[in-house]
Every structure is written in C-alpha cells, then in structure tokens.
Amino acid sequence: NKGKLPPGSRYDLFRGKAPAEQQEADAITKKNTRIIKFGKKSRAECAAFSPDGQHLVSGSSDGFVEVWNFDTGKLNKSLHYQAEDDMMMHSEGVLAVAWSRDSELIASGSAKGAIKIWRVTTGSCVRNFLSGHTK
Image (cartoon, rainbow, N blue to C red; front, side):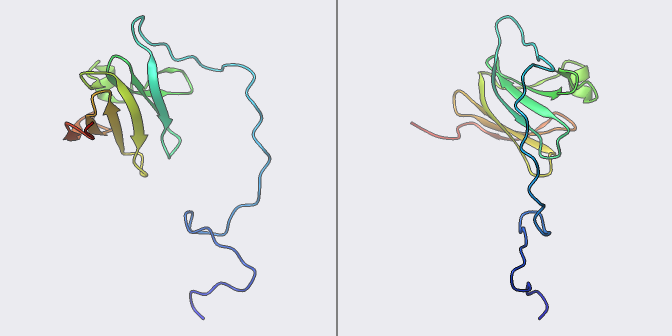
C-alpha cells in the first residue's frame, strides 16, 4: 500500500506534508509600522511580497521596479545595483509585479503592455516581451 493515505487522513499537496492545524486569526493592524516614501511626482502602482518573505517589490508610476527592506521601509541596498542607483525600470509606469515561486525572479508589466523578467540578485533583465497583449 505504498503511496496510499490511511482513511480519514489529510495531505496538503502544495506543501508536501500534513496540513497545519488552524492558527489564530491575524489581528487587524491599527497603525503603520513603516512608511515607504516615493518621489514627489511618483506613486506606487503595485506591490508584492516575495514567497520566501524576505522582500517587497513595488512598481511605480515613473517606471521603477524597486526591492524594499520592509522592516526598515528603505530600499534594499544589499542588492548592489540598488546601492549604486542602477535600477530596474520600464519606460512607462509599472502596473503589475509578481515573484517566481523561488523568489529569484520578478515579472513586471508596464502601462503599454510590455513585460520584463528580472533576476533579483543582479537586477538584470533576463526576458523582455515588448507587447504582452494587444487591443
């Protein structure tokens, strides 16, 4: 009977183990703990936490894709390209960002439909789709 579960048991296919017991509900946050500041003519259009819980990425109206240290609310300067102000960016506003499952790549989508895939450790664009969709 290898590979069969005993009757009445449960298995979480996504996590590869028995499901965790239900934990207490998260409390509603009543105050800001960190504020991420953008330039005067810029604003965040989208943001996403990495699956490994180490980073927050934002896409902004001025085309920047930035990785943040959400504990401090500052740019993650441990990424050498951000420390040198050599940012990941589009030529127009970024409206969507998403992480790969392993937290090594970021996908970003611009207002004009371009999609770029970025390697987080280097800041390099590894794929560039000039038009993700048409009208």
